[in-house]
Amino acid sequence: MNRTQKGAWCILIASLFLILFGILLFTEIVILKNLFTSLHRFVALLLFSFMVPLFIFLRKKQSTAEVESDERDRLIIKRAILVSFVCVWIMLAAVCIIPRFIVGYTGSIAVWALSLINFVIFLVAMFIYSAAILVQYGWRDKDGEK
Image 1 (tube, one colour):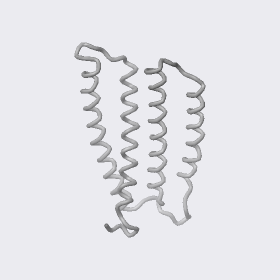
Image 2: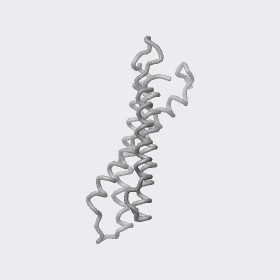
Image 3: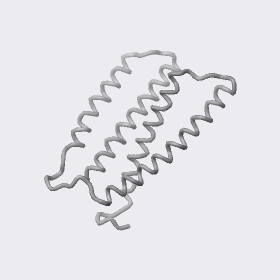
């Protein structure tokens, strides 16, 4: 597993955990009307204590002869960025349309919700980026052929 794949796995796991933590917070605060409980603090502590070994794993090289990246890695990263960019624009279009159906034409959205929406779009974009990298590495054999 090269450095690009390790980074993609770390981003995938971190963004997945943050998305799940956001869903937990949303259900607790909006649906159940409970503000922060000890469960939130425990999950946040667990999340951050799990991230430290992930980033140590990311920085560790398999061997001293391991290269940073080659042409294939750069091509895979370029394609993953393109997929993530297209998904960001699709999500931004959806975020502009969906609130109209939820709050109506004359409704309003809180200012804090806009920054939260942008952060969620960022997390989903990073998830899609890392998944695109891993999918592209999974499609090819060890020598880079289909």
